[in-house]
Length: 141
Length: 197
Image 1: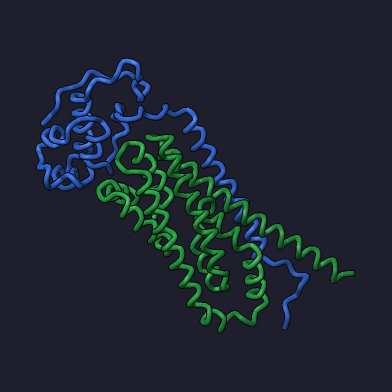
Image 2: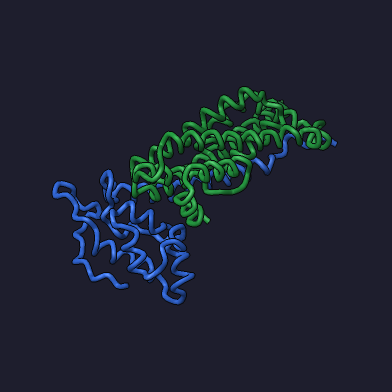
């Protein structure tokens, strides 16, 4: 028996509704991302970063060290951990394995150590954080 | 998973990025666009070199796409056993022969969510391999250099760029679904009018 050609195909009705919902949902999210992006800080200067808030849990110490111009030994020393065993681990992994129960300790220590040891930024390049840096607190080993 | 993969890309560089993108091309769900944008930012930070990263990524993602094309190609016989006599299959095959090149091209970088089904359908419908390869390579070059370039330009803001692009991809998919649905509804309306006359 052939299907009734005058009956609407519900698959295509569902497809249209799904398409409209996708457009609405993702369109709003894209718009929100664009707005956030528009009012965001300018990109960092060519070589060194200064805004420690850009440091994230997934980064490794050698990567942070490279971006912020602070030797990795200083960061490993501040955390009191071995460089050899931890140089490929993310901050989160180091925190979970070595400082379990102290949520965010590694991230915070790395941020503070960077602030304390970062080479001074050239006078003509503004701090890309868009906000003044705080007085560097002492590094906590 | 994204965070874990970002850490590993930092550790192992372009070869690992290429392997992840190849797995994405085969059909394993990985955050490919996010990694490409992030890689652009890593190039800017001097952590990766742009030419090696771009070359390895393009070669391996094209290899992955061709593997999924081959899977579709090899699965043709089994699929034909079940669907070959249906009108819908014949229409799908015709549709893909007509619009396949554009489908392959745009799903590489704009509507990436349906890239794998497109690769499989391309293989199953015996879309010519040389045309598939041409539009696949063009689309992937645009994906790697275009999105990686955005990561490079916007540096530390790359996560916001990724957020925007991912959602824009969903928005574009919505447009495609809506257009297909409306066109079919229009075709049904015309058919209904013809039958009633």
